Length: 122
Image (cartoon, rainbow, N blue to C red; front, side, top):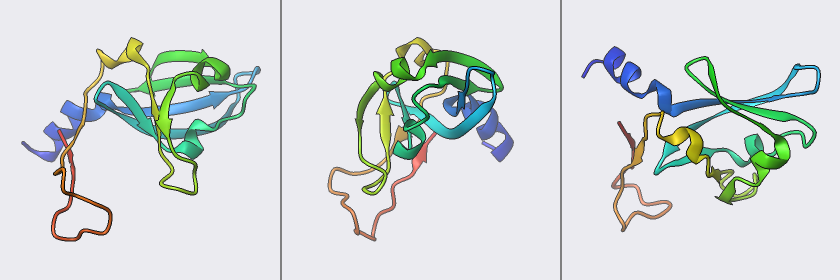
């Protein structure tokens, strides 16, 4: 598969997460990806302004728009931004519309082990 073909096959699984204020001004944003029917992003992205609305976009289209309080309720797991900086969100309304990446690795992998590198698989 060429790089262009890989991009076309997987681009729907990469999200742009945009926070907007009441006047529709963009006030913060970040990225994420779909895996195992969850939206994976950084914890510092998840911690958007509490009085905002959250637009989850893929391919230039808004797939889901939520008040921040509703977005915050979707958190299933994560860490604080000083310890791994990840957030796992449950957004089932959009998961059947997007590419799902798989995390490839072995059960024996652990932090600091250098003889095997895990990759996102397409």
